[in-house]
Length: 510
Image (cartoon, rainbow, N blue to C red; front, side, top):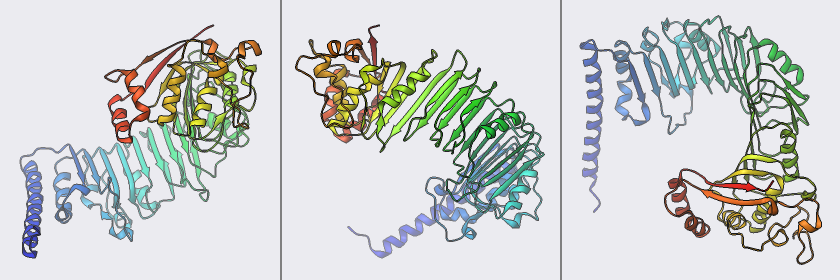
């Protein structure tokens, strides 16, 4: 039954009254804290969950909170569901009383707040503030943020992310500063002797002209650089960086032009991460204390050589080929080169397209690795068969983890190859080499086997045993047999229930 217009109006009136009552109860509760002399140590307010009447009493709430000795204040104006505004004037203005809260130790503003030129003439009393975080906040121009920063003599952590109106920021004379996160700002100038961690992400556009100036950052231990299209990393650039930051232990570089870079050499470097860097034909790494190296890429494999590293070095490689063709011989040669030293290698492969060899892989013994994680989103049967068949010509993993969000076709073929082997099977009918230029396997005579036709046996002969383990409840064999026929809803339920991959332990003949 559809209610009448009068009934709808009555319900809306009751709802509005309840919202006003809620706002009054909040105000009364905050007032009682102040009247009883009780401190409000932490106050978090998320606007998205508040009724509209709360916007009218927002300033009154903030006055009560700031007068109650608040130490941690988080204001979130719609983090979960960002609104769209025609102008910055529609952003919520930060109450001036917040700037007078001497007790504040941590301040976090997120989404659609305005701290503009009107605040320049107001005293900021952040003498105790140690952490300042501003994300998607309108700051007018550079003067506002500079005044905020220099009003925090004890600040230890500064985070500015995608703030509107700010193109550059200068950070000087902050003797306690240890951590800086900058995202979406073109230029930073840092002079901080106490700084230990610097995280800088550019504007993610080729039109940007980012600049990073670091002076007197001799205590810097961790540097993260990402998406700065105007900066090219060369040998000279890195040399100057290590000279300015002699204690640098962790270096993370994401989406950088590395034209002219041929070597990374550092005595102090312990952790190195390169992700989606381009225009580097060959890279040598000389870091005697390096114990972790992460290399991730979406479309190519960078040839590299590790000249010197810690005896505890672990190599973590992640390759995601959504569209590009994966040349497995490139991957094999990459792993073979880094395996010249006894380095544990962990490899993650995500594949949506075609993968194969351009040459006969039987001419090279595949290198051994510790762990291989697979996620294949292609549901083309020929592509999956080719990948599974050729993969173990590329490397010999001790463990394989199969992500069950892979396509059903791949899961079925993978399990058939490794688990459902029949007695008498041999490489002539089970491990065919499929080349990229052929639509069918390399032809062989019936009964032929690589043990007879090649000096190097294929992986089928070297694979001694396969043991399967998992953390899911129930029978794994039944699960894997049923998986290729599951609907998408059932598949999602299994993925949620398992909370882990299915693991295959491979034992190889020596």
